Amino acid sequence: MHELGIVFYIIRDVKKAAQENGVQKVSGVVMNIGEVSTIVPEYLTDCWRWAADKEDLLRGCALKCNIVPAVTYCEDCGAEYGTVQYGKVCPRCGSENTYLIRGNEVEIKEIEVPNN
Image (tube, rainbow, N blue to C red):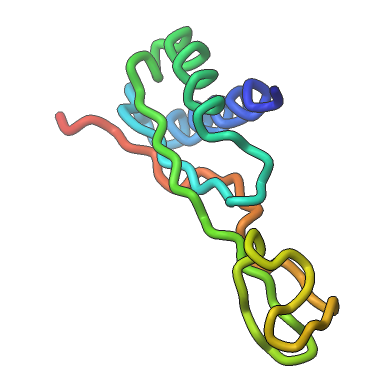
């Protein structure tokens, strides 16, 4: 389970952003998680709850995960298609001259702070 290690990096980055912006409390973190990123969102949120509650800045902070669909691009015909459904082979022309254009993300999209 590599999700715990990822949670530690998220916490580090959120703490840094909070410090740079004079934020004393974070109420939510929104993540973009790619469909083929190998991250299991349920594991990530379980690890988050355990680790975030150990930090005063993040105690009670919610982690929300947006799933980004995986899309592949075919260089031969220009088609974009769902990676999970079709894999590396373009369903339009049968080419394997393809590459992933999105769906492998693991990024912080938003850091939410409580209204005072």
